[in-house]
Image 1: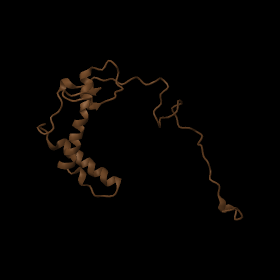
Image 2: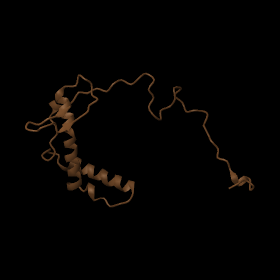
Image 3: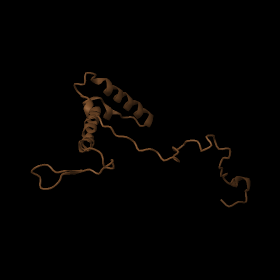
Amino acid sequence: MIEWPKGEAEPTKYWLSTLPVETKIQDLVRLGKQRWIIERDYEELKQELGLGHFEGRGWRGFHHHATLCIAAYGSWSPSGAVFPPPPAADQLELSLPEAPPDFRPRGAAGPQHAAQSVVDRHVAHDDRANPAAPA
């Protein structure tokens, strides 16, 4: 998708999509422009709700801070005056492709649906058992 505003000598923005060919142009444009909604929300989270004020050092503390900021963001304006929701008619109806029949999610049990009885172990060599072994 290319954006070429009137009065410009050449296109100003480009998007590459992997959506199905049947996707309506209106849906494609809406998805391409949706980035700015996310950018605005992130900016408001940082400026208005303190997401950018975290000064800790650990992941756990940052995760707690971010969780509280996002919870505050969700309840900040229940009337929708500050963050109006998109109209219901603009909701996309995209479907996910079907997974192949032999697909197995990462970490799922094997085809026998049970844990493996054999563990693949690589025992490290213990040089302390032989004092004559080179260091």
